[in-house]
Length: 518
Image (cartoon, rainbow, N blue to C red; front, side, top):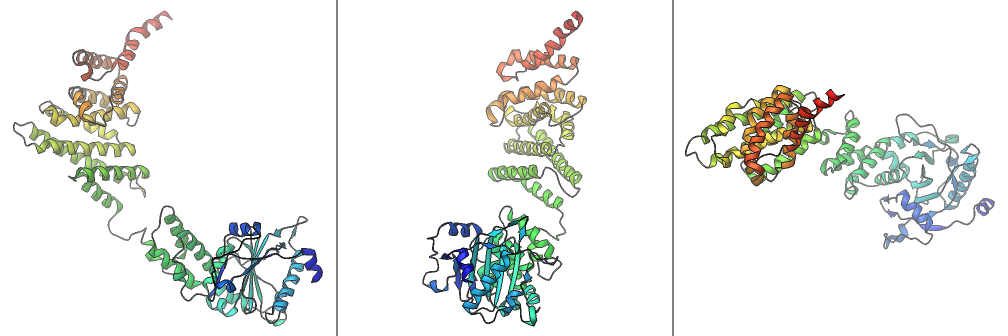
């Protein structure tokens, strides 16, 4: 023993940053804290206050890792039982020290892989060896060895895993005195979970923990068969909010517990429902409330929120994309019907002033629905619907500009979408859209520039020009010549389509002569 101590050098003893309470040990430091404590030989933990007599001691040693044992497939990081430790008698300090040295000598002869011996950099021991009757050794993957001086009856009563292991006899029929756990992924949480076995109510000890740490505790508790702790963790998770990615972590951690009698249904009901109302019915109800809202701020904020949520999902799941498409187009048809009624009412003399506001609301609703359709890449049919609104376009000319101009923003948005390639209507639909609605857009152009804050003149002009240039050359000619007459009269109050005019000019007058010269 003396030779071994001289060979390893004097041990430097420092206080471990762990609070040991009469209930048991608690708050094992993280591996980073242990390494930091190792590098700083003058570090002491002052959090224990007057209970310094209950603080454990840390002893820096180079301990070769023991060879990994064969673990049962049903239990993660299952421990192996050390037979040599079974020869120790009552937990006397001298006998314990002798057993440690003997164990160190035995371990130095094992764990040799490829001629190299992997060494544990840190050894942490806590608990009170003089009062314990069992030792649990944890060997972490980060070079940390943890020795826990515990009590057999506490572990057997709390953990089915320890109860099974400790029911086996050691060498010579003597009781097992040491249990080892090798390649421990989360030694810190193992220590904390064993500490919870000393608490009457583990749920109270979890109050100051976060969701991530409780999930780690629950995982270790399940592997140890510590059912009371698993139930306390589930009670904690059921009561606290789940923030950000915590929800996915919680759901993935508890799904496999459904087949066991832990009662995870209250937790899963937070993210699943047995309601008779389908998601499509709920979405329909939400859209109906938003479309019929009369409060400007509430409607504007909820439209932006629902639009972003639908954009993130990009499409309905569970094979309901066709149903969602029908839902969106049903809302579009309802808005168009109401808009036609409002236009008919506003075309009569002496129409009420609130009709103008209702026209603005329905126009805003249609613009919102168009953005939803664009995000879902299903806007082609709406272009067809809008291009066929010849009756609405004829009524448009009879209304005052102040009442009608917002409707032209729908036409402008469709031209922008066609120019960007966000929608792909047929050639006949594009031509019909220009024939029915371009003149109305030109008539309202000055009002759109002055009264619509979201109106982007350059973007709209680029979209109109690109739409025209997708048509056959003869259609380009007729539309651009008609535009030229209006532009020469209105100037800035008319869309500037000079770039599209230049392209048409080159197609008509330059390129034929180039081809003939060649």
